Image 1 (spheres, rainbow, N blue to C red):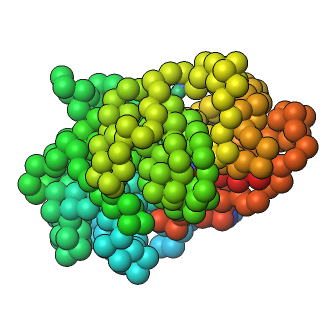
Image 2 (image 1 turned 180 degrees about the vertical axis):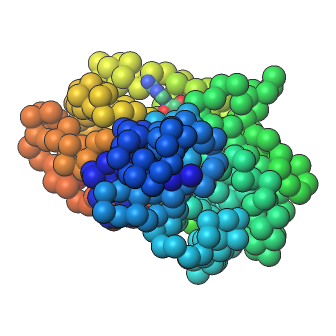
Length: 414
Ligand code: SAH
């Protein structure tokens, strides 16, 4: 099927942007009828005849062939672009070759001892749009964004089993999509088995030498927030000699255990989910740290900060890594307000001389936007400087034109 793009959508595809939104498709008429496709052709222009997973050829005014992608009948992104050259054809072999390239890069980045959990394929960023694969030691977990690759999974699985098996991965599972509550089974499990021995519900992996429990069956994302690996190592280095550390939105305690192992006296983890604390405590024990020497608070972070300030509690290292406040461009103004309120409250419990690590995982909030929520007026302080601004690690690659992929900001203020 051929899909004719508007001029702006065609320009984005030329730059290497991997998404065509539905409004980037030119309505029927014009080129379709010129080719004598008549009524059927016009319908196909808008994708009316296509099913999710169908290969589509992209064209635009003056460009009979722009590239090739896969059609998604339901999501706002109508086409994810895989190729901008005529050869090779877009089939499972072409996709398997891209995957092999992604896996081979990781072979060079990770030694398989200190770090046994990492992203094997970052979808668009590895030029395999919509396909995310995370490795947790001997298990690999697949997540699909959108529907276009679902019909391809059966054909891709033998390639995946071979390429991953050669690297020590025994089991492959599929994570239900975040939006699809229907993907959970009766036990609240969000993981379906695809290949190999059954996947464990929970397991320990290693991250930069630190043990970390991952809840494959019920945890967030594919089980863990692998994108913070390098930042957790940075927190470990920052923690030496700190008396009181506060980790807000602590989830399974990745930053908390990093701080404890780095030499912090007492680490307070705050999350609204108590199951996350149970996991964090098992991770502390696995690393030889006594959880009783630290504090795990099940609370709303904003409430906690209010009470901590009232009590006069102060911290000399604070990590603040909330869930995305801006899932869409429209939500941006409200999200900036929420970051501002959060950072103002955090600044009130940060000691003079303390370090604040503030993170944002929303691609709609640029680094400059985010820094504006940490300025002097917001924090009501004039003693802090930006020590470093970090992002996501190399196993979460992006493309120059795909700004949406660069979502993680990790700002260290001191
Ligand atoms: N820093 C973590 C990831 C944080 S994910 C890591 O490195 O692994 C966001 C976490 O915030 C989730 O665990 C969620 O339960 C928690 N959360 C969401 N809203 C919250 C709120 N208002 N107060 C406290 N925790 C909240």
